[in-house]
Length: 396
Ligand SMILES: NC(=O)c1ccc[n+]([C@@H]2O[C@H](COP(=O)([O-])OP(=O)(O)OC[C@H]3O[C@@H](n4cnc5c(N)ncnc54)[C@H](OP(=O)(O)O)[C@@H]3O)[C@@H](O)[C@H]2O)c1
Image 1 (cartoon, rainbow, N blue to C red):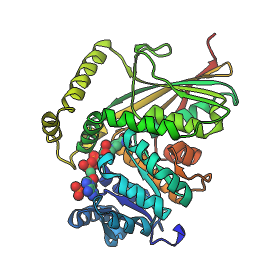
Image 2: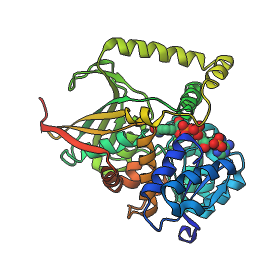
Image 3: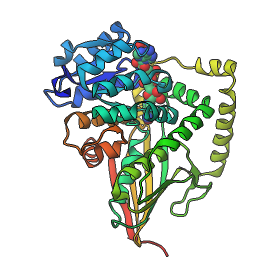
């Protein structure tokens, strides 16, 4: 059915900061012959994005523009039925995301996004996973810095260890860079919805099947000096460990007993204490409607770090894996995590779903479950580093 569609790919949210960078990445790197279009709620802004794309590739001057609004389900159904794959950068997803997921699940159109909002992902599982399985649709959330380096990085790490043995992996994230208005709004929204987030997670746990014959865990670590690296390991309760655990639950390669812990790697303890206090204060302030409104008004949608600022940004994630008497240290690294690299990760994931020969999956699936090695190859070719730093016998 999906083969008959007008477009291979539609990018929804191309008028935003990250959506614009993703559109530019596709303009530079999509293979000739890919039929793609951009979608958004404002035709004038879409036309301005198309002008930018045509400056990169003049053939895009006639690219179709699809007008669709997250508040208008019929417009999203029109997008979903016109494309084989739809990628969305329209967030906060808990406010704007569901109608497009629903439209894609019903139409059999593969869907990707860059959400880091656990509540949204759990709600989409509860409400649309079964329909997506029925229609053979792949719903792949978190295809940006949340959570591709961590999900694919752990996949890369376990492949360096013996098969069919219990495995533990610890991930240590370091990054430098600034955030966009969209990230700021989505983070504040998530902080203000802690109760709703816990409720959605509980409801999902109650119904989601677990592997019958294997144990798979993502456990919160403790604040401590890292055993393996010269840093403080600060437990990082982002969506990433949840994504890693779901990949491990879906794929037997993670072995009979898999455990993951996710940390920020911080060099100095005072940095941890100051950041923890600031985050605690922010989480308190966003719970109160007047301070939440004030905080949300600080940055206008569409803003983000300049090209110069992004050029100085970076990320490195180290993984320490142990299994079958072996120990391996790996690293995933790249440039500006939030925007340049997120645009690359989302665009390459989109091309991967649209064009590559992938194992058959359907429903809500993680990047590793849906794309695994094919995406690893694409991102390596596109300049992200996945490498083994050290390997040997595990310390006794
Ligand atoms: N996973 C990651 O690592 C990562 C990295 C970067 C961003 N993100 C997430 O990506 C999202 C976007 O971030 P951003 O910085 O690009 O934000 P942004 O610049 O504010 O862009 C938001 C986009 O959403 C569109 N939009 C808003 N309401 C809409 C509606 N009702 N119908 C249709 N479109 C609507 C906006 O359209 P207009 O232009 O018409 O206003 C704009 O295109 C955020 O949720 C952010 O957290 C995740």
